[in-house]
Every structure is written in C-alpha cells, then in structure tokens.
Amino acid sequence: MQPAESTPPVHVHAAARNPGIDLLRGLAIVLVVFNHIGLRIPLKKTALADVLPTWLLSRLNYNGYEAVFVFFVISGFLIAGNALRRWGSLGQIDMRAFYARRFARIMPCLLALVGVLSVLHLLGVQDYTITRAGQSLPRAIVAALGLHLNWYEGQTGYLPGNWDVLWSLSIEEVFYLAFPVVCLLTRRRRVLVPMLALLALSMPWTHAALSGNEIWQEKAYLPGMSAIAIGVLGALLASRWQAPPRTLTLLAWLGAIGLVAVMLDGAVLWHLLHDGYLLVLTLSTLCLVLVSQQRQSHGAGRPVRGLGWLRSWGRLSYEIYLSHMFVVFAVVRLFRLSGADQRLGFLWYLLALPLCWLLGAAVERWLSTPCERWLRHRLAKSGYIDTTAFNAAGESGATP
Image (tube, rainbow, N blue to C red; front, side, top):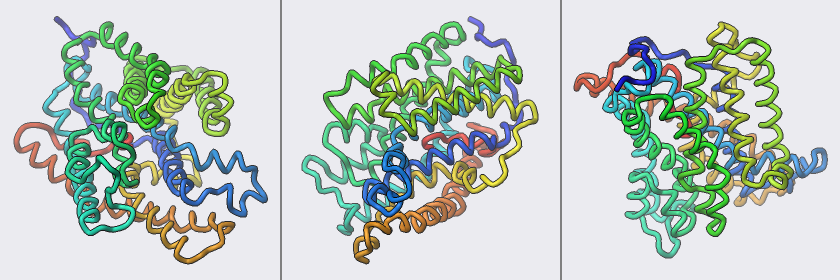
C-alpha cells in the first residue's frame, strides 16, 4: 500500500521560528500565569477595579484553561508540520526518531520537576506537600511519569499546584505516543484525515459527557486530544494549500474575533453554544496559526515591533509552564506575610511576571537546552535521529 503523499522524505532543516506563533504562545502562557496568580490575588479585588470593569479583570484572571487549549492546537500544528518536512508524509514517519525527539525535548525538565517536587514534599514544605486523603508521593510520581496525572487527579482530587500543571502534558504525550502508530497503520490521508476530523468535532460532546466530575471534565484525554487533532489537520492543510492574500486577511479577522470573543466574553458564548465554545476557541486559534505560517512562507512574517517580550514568553513557554508555580507560590506567600493591602495586589503581578520569565529562561539555558542537545547527540550516535535543525521551530506545545 502506498502512502497518501507521494512526496519523498525531505531531509532539510526545520522551519525557522515563526514570530506569529511565538506571539500566540506568549499570550497563552501569560494568561496561564495570570490565572494561577489570580486564583490567589484576584485582580477584581484590587484598586484596578476602580478604573477597569470587573468583568475584564476576571477574564484576565480566568482564561488559563482556554490558554492550554491554544497550546494544544499549536502543538499539533508544529509537530505534524515538522514531521511532514522531515519525512515527506505522515505515512512515512520514522517512529523511533519521532519518539526519540519527543523524549529529548520533554523528559529533562519533567524529570527535574518531579525530582524537585519530591524533595520539597519530603521536607514538608508548605504548598508542595501532598496531604489529600487517597494521594501519596509515590503514586503522584507514577502518575506524572506514566502520563496519567490528569486521570489521577480526576479520581482523587487536585494535587498541589506545581504537580497539577502536569495534567496537560499527560494528555499531549499520550496523543503523541499513539500518533506515529496511527499514521503508519492508516498510511493514506483519505483514511487519516476523517479520523482526525471525527476526533476534532467530537470535542463538545466528549467534554459535555463528563459533567458529573468537574476535575475529570476539565482534564480528560479526549477533549484535549481533539484540540491537538485540529492542529494536525491544520498542518496537513498547510502542506498542500497556499492561501491568496484576501483569504489570509479573512482568516486573520475570523481568528482574532473568535479568540477575543472567547477570552473576553466566554460566558455569552457558553450560553449560546455550551461546550461548543471550545470549538470556536480552537478553530480560531488554528486560523491565526495558519495565517502566521502562510505569511512566513511568503516572506511576510516579520515580527510586530514592541512585542518582542511577548514572543520571548512564547519561546520559553514550556520552561515557564513547568516552573512558574515556584514563583507564584513564593510571591503569594510574601504578599500574605507582608500584610499588604489587597487593593495593591496588582503590584505583586509586576513582581511575579518578570520572575517567572527569568526562572523559565534559566531553566532553558542551564537545563532543557543542554540536556536536549546532549540527548540528541547520544541518540544520533545510536542511529535514532539526526542532529540537524535542533529545536529551530520550537516543537513543544503545551508542553506548551
């Protein structure tokens, strides 16, 4: 049986980083950080409520879950797109090389985080100690490394915040464990695409079906995998389609309007569409990702001036995502110990945000990049992968 795409494998460097996609990821990770600070220091209870509407402040604080779905779409798009560039078609994917690349990217930071959290738990450090009945440190470690921490929380309740962020990684990496296998079994696009489309369109129903368990509904595998599938479908579309300028303009407007509508007035969309609002969110994200990719391919993907700081958040999104709760807990603890006026709570965001970025940058410089390079070198010597195009396109998604 011949693969769906007849294009031979392409052994070229991965695409350069896309500034538009980095900008979108930067926005998403900032919203995640705002969410985790806002659960503890709500902006609507600060002096900002005197000058800004409380609904806007609430939306700034409570879009963290939606931001993770943005990461899922970007992850599917980037990883499938890179696979298409490396091997020419998803039906020719090198399963060993695919897994080796994911291992090299994900495991160093994950192992380090689990190790640090385990030590903090054993030392009894507040905010890091697992105390809920039915939970234990060994079981949390197994859940985190076994990629089912989302299921574990759904069964036993929330873990401390720095463990809790790993729920999205469980969803993403289980998807990528199955992804090359499914691609090699289906081979043809006309088989793979309907399967991905069915998974993508099932999102509202799979999310709604779990309403009896709030934690599991939020963190179940299928809704998150549906968002990743939308990203993969976008990569397949982008590999065959060059959109005319007017179409790109239309997609940009649709994506921007949809994303703003979800982020700023999600309650109205929920009233109208219920769980279908997640499709609006993910399809809007895909529109913006496609526009960014097409503009870069046309040589028109120049970065927007003045937003380099936000793009840098996007470049460091995986490292910031895994490490930011250390900063959040420390800043919130200082805020409470200082007896600061709740109305001045917004000022503590100005401390937390740069510290989150600095910690993420330190993790990237001293841990994730050196370890990934070393692992890729070792895996290349073993014949699993080549060492070209090291992390050029930023393959992690939510992971973010």
